[in-house]
Image 1 (cartoon, rainbow, N blue to C red):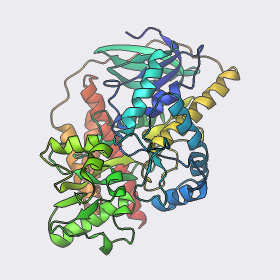
Image 2 (cartoon, rainbow, N blue to C red):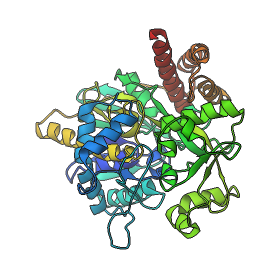
Image 3 (cartoon, rainbow, N blue to C red):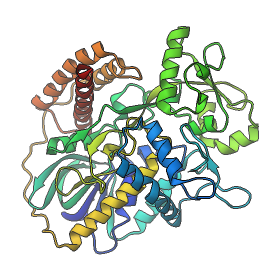
Image 4 (cartoon, helix red, strand yellow):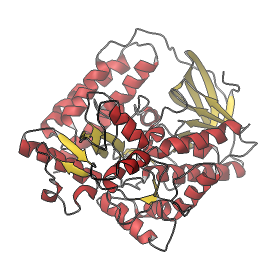
Length: 490
């Protein structure tokens, strides 16, 4: 059970951004972390590739990392945010190693750096092909050892209500409704992948933090900047199994239905072009050939190396009867990452006082229109730390503490009608996939608007299912609204 009524800082989300941010607060600052499901259900825990950072200036530079980030982001990145990411990021990578995160090393004991699409240098440190899980493991161990940090699993944030000098957080905690109060809140709720039928994201990625910030009046920016990963395992599962970009970094070829390499038709960088370029190339090639059958081929690399370098991917493929050392890996693009989100400044402050957003739910401006591979975990580290540092500065200046007020909502009502979430996902998959369809966007926006009005106007019980449906409808509405406005400007 949640132990207190008032906390200095409420952290919503238990991925890398949430836990690393919470660990910046020492004893004397009461922190509550909320995890909607289990402690390891997060996008961070599924991150495969690694963390991109300039850890040595002998064979790399801040200028090159900056250039790669801008090229991938189509030069729509925020220069100040990118400068902070690239220059401060290496120290945060060293800090997480001090906190216990392990990264692979070569025979000489030096960090083993890999290459991914869009990078001109090997600068990505990793732990096999499950870097995010290793970082989550190390951070969770540290969080559980801190007496000033409380951790609540199976806890849904229903809504945030502004009260004097802080917030009231209405929660569904282990099936029971309750409220807590906080002076500051950090939203670290991850992405929006579950708004699509096919995604690499876990079940928790329903855009809850974005919906809650929107309800509070925070500005949402570039929510239509959505990244589709070109190489998800092509199966019928809703949560697609990601085949990391580092597989191509280690030499895999992309093949079409005729088992021919084809990237030379679309980009000089071939398989190592940025994700959005490769995804679009696959869709265009599928139209050219009339087939959605695409493959990764890494059979030409040493089998023992592949099993050691990609144990999780190898095991995941074997569950579908695919041996990556002998077989072609069936792939196709699916939703992967969100570049837009809750608008924040360089210290992760939103436009709502005392409300911060970090990680994938935030729009720092770092990624521009397309994220460079392995910049996401780095962004989570850098900007959650900066949020915590800003909160500590505010506390040191003696800002007034929150004044508790009683809750005033009725959580009871009818059950959520079946089929609403599936309808939202089908609309998004048709209207706004790799190559958006203007006509489907226009029609889909009207459909989503009706769904959102139905959810808000109906008297439904505040269950996890209802709250996630409300979040998904809100997210879909904002995305399609942005897309429709962009089409009108053209």
